[in-house]
Image (cartoon, rainbow, N blue to C red; front, side):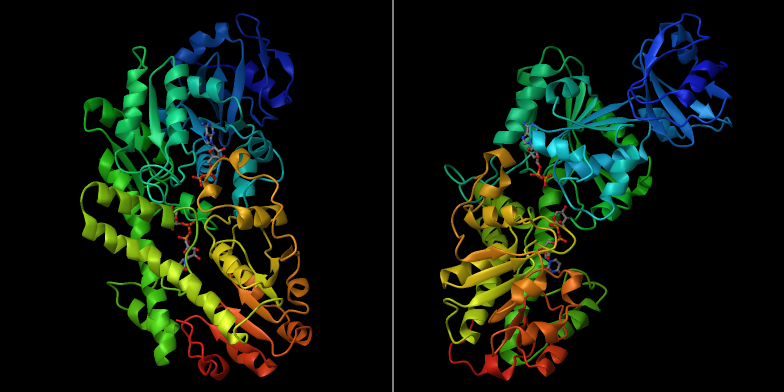
Length: 581
Ligand code: UDX
Ligand code: ADP
């Protein structure tokens, strides 16, 4: 063990971002450049843990603080050394295994951004670069206004950005430099050609794979992070190995299970991390390398390793099972309305069975989000391709019930309001596909709005996290168009300006309205002053709760005519001639 480097630590302690400084006291006087903002090497007694570091001292040209926790990890001439502050505790096994590893994630979206931020936070010894072709998206990741809203994300990003977490559009350079490349790009559903409406369009994946093959000069582990159809790895492997120049690529499947709105919690304490790889010695080595990354914070027993195809299919299966539960309870909600049962009571009673469990049994206007429908359609397509028509039809029903639920909700609204909403103002509270996210991908709000607009309603929409521009784009896009990089989506939506207004306040949205539809379960909707809202509405005033979050008893007392999914029907709604089923 060599004593060090005290001058280097001292220089770190004094240095400021961007400053060029002389590292006095080293055998060969060299200059170093701070490439990260600020540093907090606070002690003057430092030791290096690697003998090589001492040898490399005389070669120091450039260095970089990778993280600042109890210890400082410093990259010197490309080789990392750890400057320990104070004691000489042993480094953990996992940290030793990944020291100096460079990760690059292609795709700075809902999955890539938060996942890489968590890896950077938990692995100060790893440099994490997140790259994207979208300049505005990267600019936003580098600003105070992150491009996605996710509770807790700001803090995580702020803790590591500029230290060991970087966002960049220099895709090719950073991919070339990386040891592990995560790919988290769009995988839209095909809208034309073979498998249209079901199969995944792997255009973006393929172009990412070709680029990796083109720019790579060293061996790489390529990790599928975005959900892809089973056997995608095989196709990617072919692209990579066809173009290789003696470079060894190992493909892993490491599907993400985070849910939006709770992404940080899910990443911090995942139920499981799943890593699938080839069952060859090289494949298993790659699995072990990725496992070492997660082992920084995930207990080993929660890191599952499987073969590639099991990992790919597990992701589709998990999402299909979750969506199936929602379609099951939503199917029950229709029956509850017909029979006078209460869907919340049924869900509670059913969920008390420990074999079934209580989660994911909230009846709703329908599930949304970028994954459920897309993954099930994918599953259906794979089944069909394998001649498993009965299995395909079974899963198709989950999506069909979801569509039925959205249509059923619109019918309830229209039939309750004297069978027409033409020219009537209807307030839409909530546009995101669930609370605590600004994400609108496949949100049931789109179909509900289209249904009401089809009946010539005038919509006044309010969501605390979704911008007017996004809402207008969503309402003018064709099915599946949302799942392309932003610059390839329609940019200036011009339609619907007369029928749709977007406002920044629930009171404004409901003023002068005939009816209110609650589409997203934002907490703030529970605490609105409904007396005030009622007073400002046209009578009779209707409220339709698509999430079962409002206190209907109180709303009825105020004078509202109410409807909640799967709950005993208000006499007004029940006695209507036009049955909404
Ligand atoms: C989902 C999976 O949960 C996650 O593991 C996967 O990685 C990505 O897809 P996400 O789409 O972010 O995550 O949200 P999720 O919480 O699963 O909700 C999906 C939809 O189902 C939302 O529209 C939500 O409102 C709806 N939902 C959920 C219900 O209608 N009822 C429920 O009981 C639960
Ligand atoms: P997810 O929810 O899976 O994270 P997103 O749509 O939020 O999906 O993010 C995917 C990101 O991938 C987008 O920001 C898009 O610009 C980016 N992207 C797509 N193709 C490429 C590519 N070839 N190189 C870099 N980034 C890409």
